[in-house]
Length: 436
Ligand code: F0G
Image (cartoon, rainbow, N blue to C red):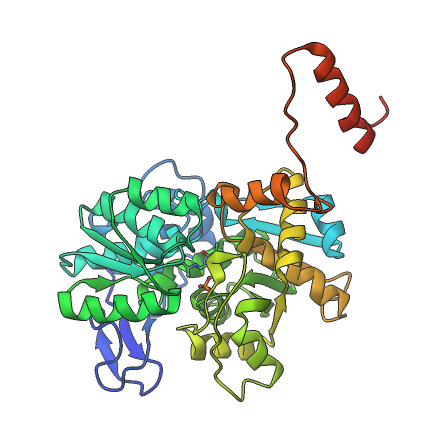
């Protein structure tokens, strides 16, 4: 079945562009573009259509992004789509993490289960599909690491050259390794992520390369499916809160759009509140929220959570809209809170990268402030996989002095059973075995 095309609409001046227009921003006013899709028919009802596709073993329906194609990019045909596939990530419950956060009904949406280990794959499948549809010669992005890993993988699949700009010395090792392995030209820029983004924007204009950062509206369409999938996993009973880490604010914007549209097409009847959580050292959005969003702030960012080490978020206005429309909240958590929470999530056998733990740390903080009620239903999104940042992990567990509460030091021993026994005894003294 063919579908009529979507439009790209400028969020500032309302100018409409064709779906296949490749302008990175509005040519009239420089505003960010947003996609508008034709209204999906409701026969059969969307919920039923989505349910039938769930669990498909191959084809578009096997992707947790393209299963929702009516709300993502209805006109893309099977042959055009560049899909790994991606999505289909689990919604977990872990008593120890709920207890840490202080809420009884905490679910964890683990986006680290995507093919390159972060939620970025959901946006990248759509942006890469669109890049190929519109005849891109090459693709580019600025990144704190996850977008670059995802771009490199999907560009390899699409057969397109990829160019990435990352801040030198500030990208976690797993992400850098992936980006090189998947074959992208990896530029280590002497500057911050914000410098990388300016350079990527300028270079893509000059070199005629398509920019696939989350300012690209097609990225957001894919990222919306994190919300659609978690709502479906809850049988469309919207939770009270959805918490997520916030850096460049693309994901916060995508979540707001997903919720707005899910309600408009009748998938849900009430909006959850969004809780966007920043790292204290990179928290212009949280600071602005505290002042009623009266000022658009930028900061010199610094945080152990390098994924969200961003001082001048690009999707500011649309994220403000997402927070306002959902009666949401923006907070900041310290690096110590991020690392302590990450250690709890890791020790539950779930695991995530530092930035991801900001969502759960934020729930704990908002619970402590009484913003989130003890009986409210909360979903916290973990955005990236544990193995993304092995250096932060080893530093926390092995090298930090004095050892933090969650540290699990490795023990070097002589090669004999007595040494094993001694180490085991010390280990069990610290955490005794439960009674048989
Ligand atoms: N969590 C992780 C693991 C991320 O990599 C990012 C962003 C975010 C959260 C925040 O999402 O920027 O949409 O607010 N990473 C980008 C990158 C900047 O280049 O990989 P956001």
